[in-house]
Amino acid sequence: FGSSLKFMIMKHLKICLFALFSLVLAPGAHAALAPGKVQALLVVGDVQLIDSAGNRSPLAKGQTFEEGSTVAAGDNSGATLVFSNGATMRVKAGGQLTVDKFQQAPSDEAKEGTFLRLSHDPSQSITSLDLRNGTLQGEVKELDKKDNSSFTVKTPAGSAGIRGTVVSITVTRDADGHVTGVTANCVVGSMGFTPEAGVNTWMGNGGSSKNI
Image (cartoon, rainbow, N blue to C red; front, side, top):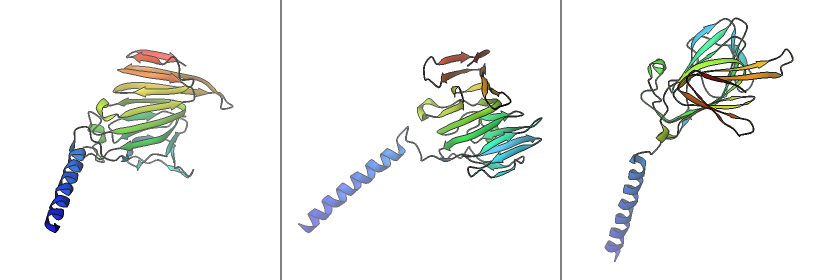
């Protein structure tokens, strides 16, 4: 009886282990997401990096940071940022951009110093940026739909969903800080802009723009 029970336990254990490995190795299975890396490729003039606690420091060329950070460019200043999913974003003079969320699955392709050479999103990634002021120009490399990767830029007027696109988004404010306009420009590819109300999503193709 003891040998029979031991045999049954070992049999069930092997079945459970096989099912576990099959799940891990199955197509479409995703590794756990972790904070991705953002690197300052180019910095001109007075550009500040503000961490999640509000601490400010000058952003230096080559410096890396993660989600929760804000890049603020002064007059006649700007920064070009490259993400570990291959996206590049340029914060122009007067711009303020917060990396609300940037999570990415581990990838051998996404190594510091190689981000700019990536031709596509190397692994599942979820990116959510918040443009509070100024102009953001950039390119998002092709995202893989089956990995459910996403790249979103939020503005005071709504959010732009970007996938394999060259874009320019501008938020303008008056002297009192009130928003006076938001413009979304799709240079190459396509993008969707959903207003805060969540209705009438604008779908833009290469060469089209929309004043929100």
